[in-house]
Amino acid sequence: MIVLGLETSCDETAVALVNQDEILSNKIYSQEVHRKFGGVVPEIASREHTERILMMTAEILEENMMTEDIEGIAVTYGPGLLCSLLIGLNFAKGLSYSLGVPFVGVNHLEAHIYSSFINNEEYCAPFLSMLVSGGHTSIIKVNDFRNYKVLGSTLDDACGESFDKVSKLIGLGYPGGPPIERFAKNGNENAFNFPVPDPKGLNFSYSGLKTSVLYTYRSLSQEERVYRLADLAASFQKAAIESLILKLKRAVKSTGIKKVTISGGVSANKLLRKKLQELDIEWLAPDMEFTVDNGAMVGYLGYKLLEEGIRSNYDLKANPRLFL
Ligand code: KG4
Ligand code: ZN
Image 1 (tube, rainbow, N blue to C red):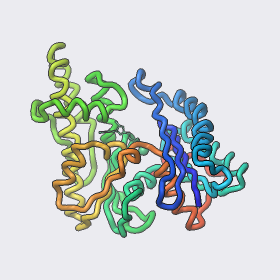
Image 2 (image 1 turned 30 degrees about the vertical axis):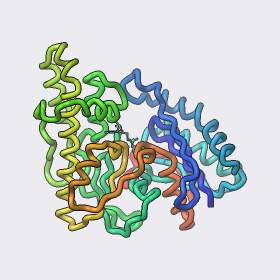
Image 3 (image 1 turned 45 degrees about the vertical axis):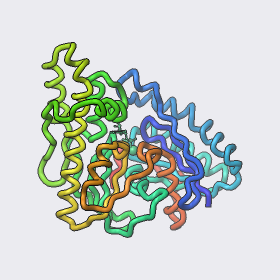
Image 4 (image 1 turned 90 degrees about the vertical axis):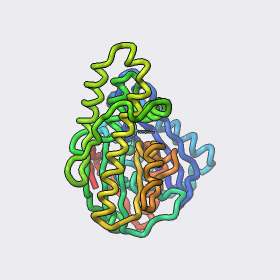
């Protein structure tokens, strides 16, 4: 069975073709237009999706010469920006109807969770899943396929969101993760002593760290803001990643589960991966192309759902606040 995976929940227009465990093609268009605004502008995002999705789907089908071979369509129906979700979902419904093939709505968060298994051997449950993206920061216990217990989540900003906000503050632009990581390489991570966020238990909090960077930045002279940029990036990154590691260690200790998956945009971070290497756990993170929002993860989970006979009806609504 060949499944088309569609993802338009935020500012990535993404299309993929999946054949069981194999990703035949994965196209991601990260909408550059938002950069100048320092964050995603929902109305512009949905217009960009509208302009791209048909073209990208046509390209991927043409390159793989397989329109008539598509047997199912998987599409993100939440969570995300309503007007962005609607573009992918309505496109999927139209295509499903016209090709006469089933479609299934996929929860974006679940798609991230299972993205770690693309090109990797899948864990048997139970395992822990740390989902770190621009919209979410959670530690989830996966009891069984699609059976979850959320052990902790962010109380305010998501981890990726804090990278984005700090990056905007210090002039490195949006999205913030990649430039902060790049600048941090040349900086001293101990130059500034930012607090490692540690709210009670397994919850996360990133707004205090962001504010701490803001106050420090304000206290610097114009020259310092330039020549200490790499130090700022490195010190912030250290504290942000340290908090993830601290919570993960706590979750492993309290559950006794040592099998962990890490996913979402922040899982691309090399310092995070290096720190994970130092822990006494078994962990999996997606290949880089499957860390940020992508259609392959939607197609990958959608394939499993369709295979189990799960289908969505044409009255499926987009759900911006969908959770697990
Ligand atoms: O999973 P994703 O594409 O979108 C959501 O579902 O939110 O994640 C995007 C987030 C952004 O906040 C971005 O700054 C962050 O992931 N990110 C990173 C890195 N690459 C992307 N954060 C830290 N280090 C990175 N290398
Ligand atoms: Zn995402």
